[in-house]
Image (cartoon, rainbow, N blue to C red; front, top):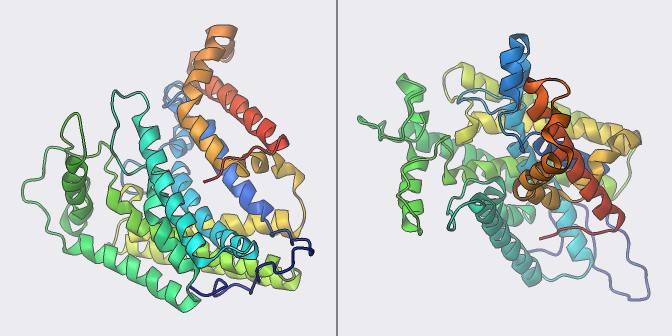
Length: 409
């Protein structure tokens, strides 16, 4: 590994103890992006399915409320953007993290050891969270933090490579994943867990029938289980971490450009990078939608298809460019402060959302009574409960931020 991240301006390690260390540049827009994504999760999870009672009472709101649930199979909703946003942002942060550790004098061996430790910790954290409420460890590898952990070491290696290698890797990932599914034989007799959303050529991308499902039947049944694994109820696969790496790689390439800018100067250069991010996002969106419309590859989040990588990556580039232009360049930051508080402590909020939110909701109902959430009627009670829990979790993040208490891996 070279001493600097190729594709990023050189940052030399500190050599004189008497010289104050330069503060690593930090993207407020990235913190805001993380925070908005985490808040969407925190305000939605405690009463899962909160939107259905509202939709039943107000059918005209159903198209809007459907955006807070995953697409059944083909398609894309706002909720479908949470996981790709997480993975994209891990890539964006990678050049900043790499350069910061090199600046503090970390050796290549230390950097690789840290990356390996982080990968293992993320994998196990995902397994731990998926095991909550169960009698034994639930070995499943589709949780977002587990998927990030599985992809993290390849991402770290790509952070040391030039742009040309990153582009070659991106194209190879997308084409190889598409070819694997397109060439995988469509089973004549699908298993009991199969759900046949498509026929014809797209039958290669049906639920619990393809190569990802075959890998999980072998891998997950090789691990200790209380009962045999026959298929994921929603169709996710461990193999999704491979195309997910492409999503993280898109973030890495965007982050490398933004790092070079924050380490140098802004102004016209900043506008140029924002323009490029918007242009790249438009190109990715157009290609992904075209692949879907031409019947080459459906947009399926639960299989992380190449067309989904392109469309979600294009949208992520647009969101990052918008937030960077408004927050980091224009300095309009105060409006995003609540999100930044969460974005500086994303692992803490993620852990609390899955491990603590249910307990907080039960405590609020116990001490405040359930009637407090009935003020807008029964249909809106689950939503008000979620908002109350999200506010409590945000206040914990705010307190941690004020006291500089951050959860890091």
